[in-house]
Image (tube, rainbow, N blue to C red; front, side, top):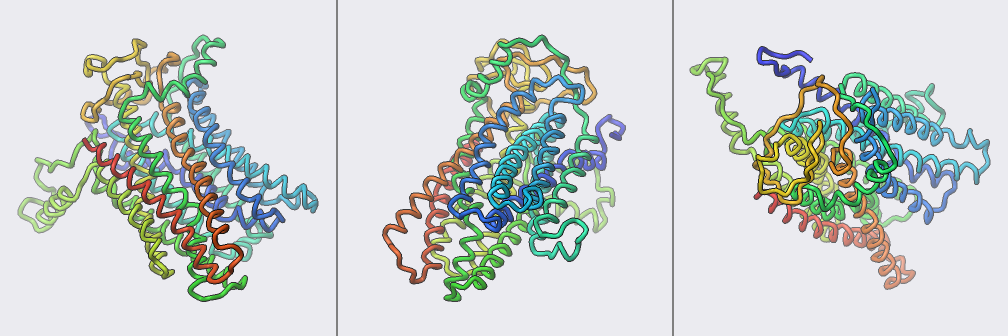
Length: 540
């Protein structure tokens, strides 16, 4: 990486590093959008019953609950000469490509046998979910490992942008006649989709792994007690984490109770509103309603991508602090109109700039308000606008929590013990990127350390009592996954209660179903309101 006279990387070098480091997340998001956007219709087309499709999607929370924490704690201890994260990233990407290939060509592989076709597709989707979670764990931990605390916010902001690019690309591919455009990639829409997703994922992962430098750990003596400690770390880490990270976990638990109804039912909600507005129950009307839902989610993805580009410009991290006007004269001259305009723009930006917790609070407020308004909305266009507005909140959800966790990990790991003597710290020494285990509170204002420079000497494996990025991010994912079980159980009870009350009446069925979904979304919005309150308290 090129540097300036002070030894710091140049602006263009930093930009290229951010792109290379996070571009694999765009490929991962494209794969995820193909699975979630086209998986259910594909399974139904193979002959799987609707009542069983929901069981297939339990693979997501199950794999997130199992894979990410385990991949985190084992990759933390990896002594591969290729680095801690990259072997897991490459392996997970290869499994993802294999699973996508099986999904696209399930009928051909099964030889036309219907039962075998369904089982093969279901197993492939489960393998794909486990591989996606393994890949996500490695890519998120890689950002924390490579970037210093002062650049964690920018790194996670770029990850959010890549997620937006992957989403927009995935939804756009759903509108195109890919078989007509790219017939040489497959004879069905799903075959072309899975082939494109596999190619994009392979290319982006190759770029990230080739361009990103990891400092490997020296091999440490291993024994059965170390392996046992790896499993125990998952359950003991919660009480030994810094208080800032504990608070973020609580916020995420409440916020994702609101997010999962949005992700599960948004398209169906718009489709049901469309059916009720047009008083039609034909398959053709349902298809038009589904397209209206897909269009709303495409607008949501576009707003999310635009937000990920703009919001970081008016947000500052706790590590870097608010923007300060340079003492140097403007390059255009203090008297020039260009220089005056730049000064005005900087002054406006400085007034608009808010901290990460404040922006997170605002985004949760927007999301909770939009979800609660779904109860009183009956227009497809207005409901679509509400879903699109949630793109701002989604961009923040994919950026700020990870940024704050990464800043905490990198900053606290570099703080000497005497900098916060009021904390009861574990006596194990800090090595490399590993976090000292604190039983007290770590104020945000003391997080101003720097990280070791790339290319430094390899570090030894961590002590069993130390926590590191992979373990913390794995536990963080548990607090994202648990709400999915809560939401699935609660929404099932609500839908069953309405079915029992309404009986077999089919009058205004589309509108009634839309109101049921709106009630679930509204309850999720109330949970997001609680998350917003906790985030507001996090500011202090």
